[in-house]
Length: 127
Image (tube, rainbow, N blue to C red; front, side, top):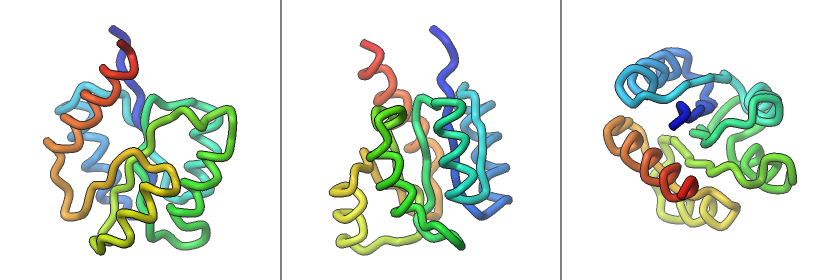
């Protein structure tokens, strides 16, 4: 099986480094990162990752706006997107899921849960 590529989009550079390590070494994924929604959109369209972890609150374009743009782009609409955010209100979860997110993870990050959910999602889609 080929290594699955995960795109992590977050403006917190220290979190991106930890995600690279935990998902890469610990999870066996090929991790690419972007520190803004705009950069993430470009990477998603260019590299076509197998899944995306997307922060909601970022300067400039928000993660929710990026989610809507990705889900309306026929070239990448198939990519499963999981929000990874500090927003914990149920209405935020519902909004993200209604706008096309497949799942919703809150900060502080439970890396084992994310790895398990990514593996399960990608195995299901492959089979």
